[in-house]
Image (cartoon, rainbow, N blue to C red):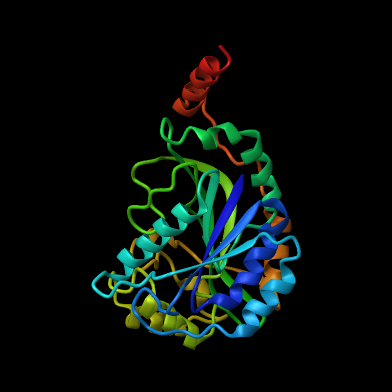
Length: 290
């Protein structure tokens, strides 16, 4: 089975765009929501009842499962609370191909990934013998301008599918072998209203890793006239965000459509002749067939 877990918090409104990209190509979708409506930093959020009403109307195949639990522990850091929630969600999801994404992450043309995972479904059953995690290319939206979006496209990798999800820091899984894929994941990230950005940077897992107020001011000052001059500006690893690109689009749906036309999803795996991954699977399949 292919199961997708989505973390729902203050950015709940992006979940519908996220779910639309994957709905027909997965078996189950889990939405993790703190039962006390707390963020990882302990702030209280509101999720209107209309969200759940609209979700029920949208979920005509009854694939969506609401998972509520206590994900905020006061004596843990925001990063520790994030990791804990992801771990609890993974356990709730059970066995199979386990994919975890955030509400503002959009895996367009998910059917390409679905086909690959189904062709290799046996790998999802040998996690204890061969734990693997697939990473995708993060396409980070940095700012919504009047007529389009600024974004970063620099092959930044994010782990998102595993046969053995055991998280050590956010979505990182140090017990698993990472395998790079071609799958693009559009991350709405910083392309939000100013009030949302302030909420995000005060409550996400990296809120103590850099001067968020200074970076927020930097973000505020970027516009159509000056964006091209900024290079290597990621707050934690400068070269990760090497430059800004621009696509004209009136909303996120149009951005996804235009980006997908320009960058269609491709067969997920980069293989090499000496890839240990292929050798291990060949050995495992040989034993399986005898």
